[in-house]
Image 1 (cartoon, rainbow, N blue to C red):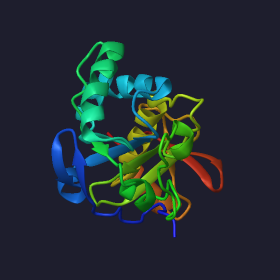
Image 2: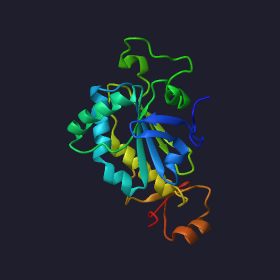
Image 3: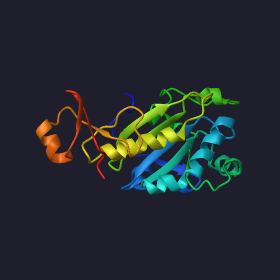
Image 4: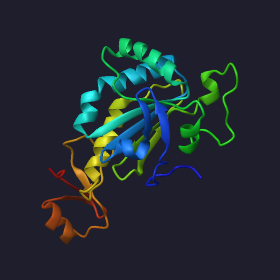
Length: 217
């Protein structure tokens, strides 16, 4: 069974270039983003890790920890970080999980249970380890997205999605297409007009089931 939205993520103990961690303990009361890669020293992945490093202040402002996954070992990760930091022009302060045994890749349903890494492998042997997972403080999966090796991930979209999730959580709202912070939000159809008025004040009815209001402050 694959890992689905609102499932609790596996509480794995993993080796990283920052030492051994247990995922649930590492997340603590924060949000977390786990982003995976099929191999170290690959061009697209290097630019992606660099983009994550450049957004360190944005992650911190959102109370969010980031952690990478690659199916190579810790020593390779440490060497690769030199390349990542050269590309990014900044420190890559986040940990990278060494998933040489594919435990994480299989537990997060990025590879089938029977998958293995052959001798002389190439990135194509683990090409599907190209996912982003946004995880809430409750340790549940809130969003996932998967890219092919040929398309670099858009971390502006990852940030936008994280903002949308954090806006929705605890505020009882949803966000429309292309929403960014500052835009109006959607009142769920399950909320009556009377309750919407009491909770949100003024709102705009576009369709009986589509009502917009100012985002809660």
